[in-house]
Image (cartoon, helix red, strand yellow):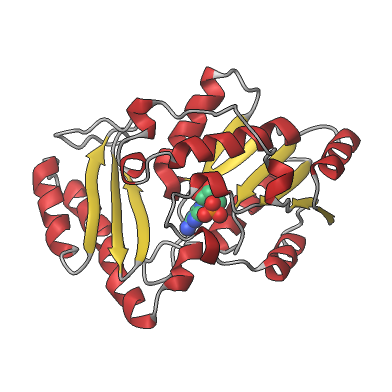
Length: 274
Ligand code: AMP
């Protein structure tokens, strides 16, 4: 496996490969969620590149940029074992020039609601780095998790609006046996907090159960979820369609229930696609 640390090396590597190129962008501290995206890409593409880059522009002031978990050696091992061809681990100064004026702006409609409302500017930073990485790597396929539903939708929209010749492939959310969605940020949780956090996935599972038993009223389902998560500092529970419009009635194959909550000082997001 090639370990690539600079943009120049990446450009040279890119020139040396042909046929389909699968790309999995990550912020590292890789877990089974990332690995499942990598495995999907390995099956579908001739070449497979994973990036590990903690992107500063998607963090707001006061967020966890400085303490975001770093596990470089383990990430390299995991990628090697998963059959990745190249891992791209640039520095901030490689990815951002000194006085960049170009900003990729997430649309107001989707970029500044829910996650984007709680973290204004977050999605501008996400789209900016993803577009930079797409331009460098020019993948044929790029893999994103449904765990970050709003991000996935914004990336699909960017690819569509800018006519980028890239297929976006979504991966299912991977969970611990307990139901807790895997996240690099789970490393911040104490054992006690991990147990408390289970209210999130439990409430989503309960919502799905209510829906399959014939209840499709958003208010009813949201109220029950709020009760089940009353031990947490819930930032939002919202029932939306695939375009992220709020809906009053749940509809099969066109509903996502999204949750963001703080467990102690750790902010977690999760969702379920119905
Ligand atoms: P991150 O390193 O958190 O930026 O995530 C990199 C990619 O992995 C994104 O496309 C995420 O949606 C995806 N991802 C994160 N957690 C999970 C999970 N539990 N299951 C599946 N995909 C995930």
